[in-house]
Image 1 (cartoon, rainbow, N blue to C red):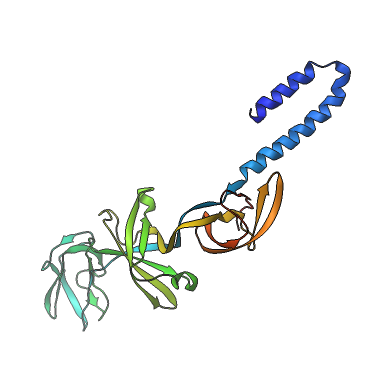
Image 2: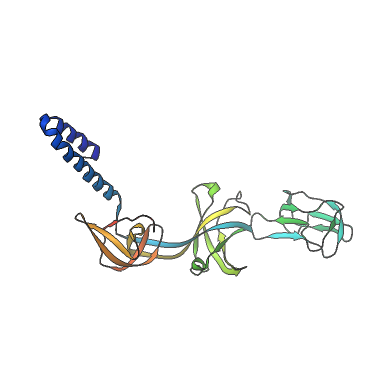
Length: 272
């Protein structure tokens, strides 16, 4: 019988009693309601210690990048005689891009899309500045910047789960290709698998790098752990137990030691 049904039954029972008993029974009813409500609330705030598998991951926001980009530059100042392409144009290897007064026509060395045209006809180009950029949108990888604490766990070959917000809850797979420092940060190069063509360079993805995993271990609810201790609910009493944990994810932590067992009910204590 659930809480509303019990309350309705008690009210009906009180109504059936003589009126002179009502002032005595109402406080008893109120006390019972409070105790029952607390009991129901506590039942919702417990979770059991279980046995299972666990994967520890490092999370980050990655950016899609093209691995094949061509920036047309010149070594000496030269005026532009003609520009053959516009931004968004599809080009093939050998397609004319720009004709200069000083050294003729420059062509694309790859198949791709023109993503930037930085000058106009008759303008003089500053040496080593990109004039036209061509990008192969089919060759893409992910780059994510991590803090030192997360980067130290990442290694080449680890599996990665990838999710693009624009595609909803659909997940893709990937693999860590390399980890390296750059400009005071730690970058992770991720090679994705079978991502759709509408995912373009510059878009972002949520990534979870699987740094460690274990099977058939005892797992403690992560929200029940506070400063290395958990509270066990047993026979209506709460006992505090000290534990040591190993790898963890957002839901559970691996139990390394502690006087607890599978099936124990852990009192959840909110976010740690």
